[in-house]
Image: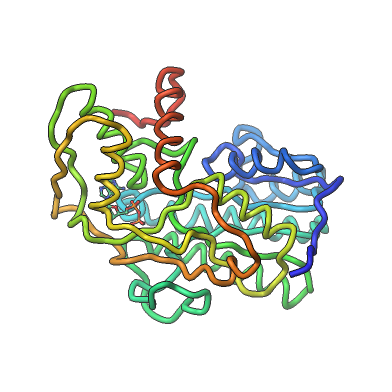
Length: 322
Ligand code: GDP
């Protein structure tokens, strides 16, 4: 896989730079000899087509990374189907189309492992896409992400531009959302375990059966893989980004308690949904390039907890209304 896009001297627009993934991409791009462009949400609503077209025409980036998305855990996905489908379809189409109109040469669209069918073969190869029905708790988000990767493919096919897609597995790390109503599992369990340690409470409540299997990638590893793909990949197919290893939610809960400290006992709430039974990426395409993650789950969890403690003190962790 020869280098296809030299970042040196390029202007790279990171859409969604305040989010967990976008901010990690900005951190990683700082090590490249490129100019990073960002725009605050207050200045530009990415759902506003005319605004995005104007911004893109005015700023003329050479490359675009779409890390902007309406995201959330299993509960939020289920509760706000319009937001997950409509916001994502709108903002990604605006950015991809405006990028094309402004002659952006390279574009990287980010999806998620939930694009694959509920009962996809495990680990899930890139060609498992559209092989069966989606998991209902996240189908709104998944449909939007599938449309985004197809739109990049369509632009490649019709206009020959180098627009690529990466599908990261479940991500976690600094900048994650710790609001229990909308968060993913790691920040939720970390926040709950931390509260128990403080209060001396004894039971950590885990949603579902504890049996689902999930793969987790530390966000700085994800950003490293994304910048690697931006520079080196220009294929038609999307590329899975993960570790190739998974863990049960019950074992994950044990690992979180051990990192946070305290002696909480784990209980399960079967009235909450399990979601996909298993979601393990087949990462052979990515690993064939030689790329590997740096952080094992344990060290990623330790770093995330250190970040959480530091930012709790500073008062800028996303905790939600409670
Ligand atoms: P998913 O990968 O799209 O299902 O996203 P999540 O990170 O929200 O959930 C992963 C798994 O963790 C699901 O089986 C959840 O039921 C389970 N889980 C256990 N406790 C929690 C919790 O407190 N919050 C969330 N979001 N998920 C939890």
